[in-house]
Length: 319
Image (cartoon, rainbow, N blue to C red; front, top):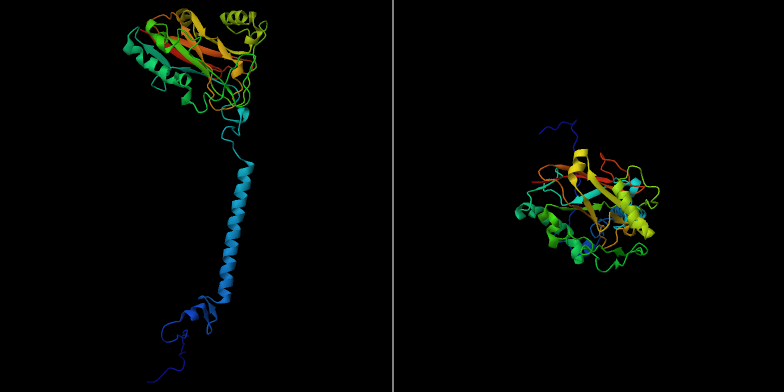
C-alpha cells in the first residue's frame, strides 16, 4: 500500500493503565500521576481557591443583608412610616357600624318593627361589639386594662377599657339596639393612626363657627362642672340637606357626644379597643331616605368630604 507522504499522522496519547484492579493505596496516592485522592495538588489548589471565593462571597452577602436588616429593623408594633410619612396621613376618618352587606352601599334599610327585617343589622352590631363584651377575643385584653379617666391616662403598655354595658342604654344588645322601635342606634369609631395626638377644642368660648349650635350647647353643659371633660374629640351628626335635617329628628349621643381624650395616642398596645359613640336616632321620619353626615371635631382633624377625612356619610330608610 502506497502512503501519501504529505499526510500527517496523529497519535493520540492515552493515559497508561495498570492491568488489574486498582489498589486503595493507589487512590490515596498514585506515584505515577502524583494524584492524592484522585486529584493532583494543582487541581486540589484550584478547587480550594474556588470554594474559598464562593464561601467568602456568601459570607459577605449575608453580612450585608444582616446589617441592612438590623439598621432597618421594623418593630411589629411600631410602623416605620408614620402619619405624614405614611399613606393614611395624619388626619383620621370616621367609621360607622352596622355596615351593609354590599361594600359599595352605605344605606341602612329595614321595614319598621319586623324582626326578620332588622335582624341583619342587629347581628352585625352584635358581632362588631363581641370583642368589647368578651375581652378574651382580643390579644392581651384583660391583662393590660388600666382604670382610665380624664385625669388618669394609661401608662405605657396599658390600655383603657370600653365598657359597653354602662352608659349606652338603650343602644344595647338586650334592647335590640332600638331597631325594633324604629329608632335605631348607629355606632361610630375613629380610625386608628399610630402616635396621633388630638388637639382639643377645650376653650368653650372659642369654638369653631361652623360647629353645630346643639354640639356647642352640649360642650358647655358637659364642661360646666368639670373642665377635664373638655379634652374630648367631639362628634356631631346631622342631615346633609335642609330636608334631611327636618326628617332626621332628635339625636342622642352615648355615653358622650365624643371620644374621650385619654384613649389617645394610639400606640398599638395589646388589647387596645377603639372608643365608641352610639348615635341614637330617636324619631327619624319613615318612608324616606335620610342622608346623614357625622363629623369628628378636633383642631388637627381635617374636614374633607371627598377624601373622607374627619367625616362619615350614610343613609337611613325605615319603611
